[in-house]
Figure 1: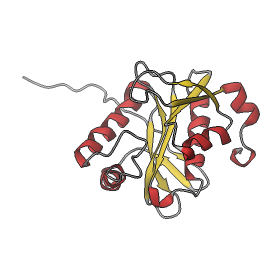
Figure 2: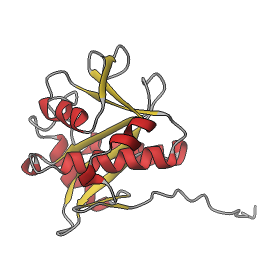
Figure 3: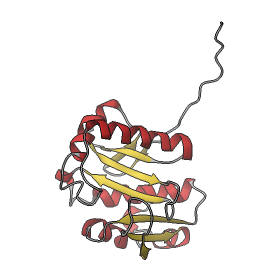
Figure 4: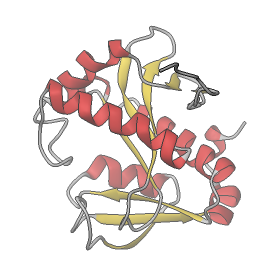
Length: 190
C-alpha cells in the first residue's frame, strides 16, 4: 500500500501582546509550571480542586483542541519581560455553557498585580473582534472576590447564578459587545 498525503491541517493560535503579557499557544515547557499551579490548593480553591501533572497535560491538550474545533480558546500566559509562564487566559465554550466565557488563572505569586485584569481585557477584545457573539460572560465562584472584582471593574454585570456544568452555582457576569465598545476601561484602549 502506498500512502498519499494531502494538505496538512494547520491550527492557528494567534499571539496577543499586551503591555506586560504575551498570550500565546501552548508549549511543552508550559506543562511543569502549569502543573505546579494546578497542584496548589490556594490557586485552585475556586476552580474545582487540584489535579496532577497527567491531568494538566489532558487539560492543555483539551485547551489546544478548542482552537481547532471552535477557532478560539485559552492561551498560555507569559510574562512579556521575563518569558516566565504565568498561567492561562482566553475564551472558552462547551455544550451547555451559558455563553462564550472569558477566563483567567494566574500563578499565585503574581496575584494582586493586575495581570488577571490585563489578560481578561485582551480576551474580551479578542472575543468581540473575532467571534460572532453579541455577549461574553465570565463564570466566577461566589466567594472569589478577585474574579468578581475583575468582572465588575471591566463593566460586566451580574446576570444569574449558573445552573449547569462544572460552574453550577457560580456567578455569571456578562457584557455586551456595545457596552464593551462604549465603556472599555481607558487604560486598556489602544
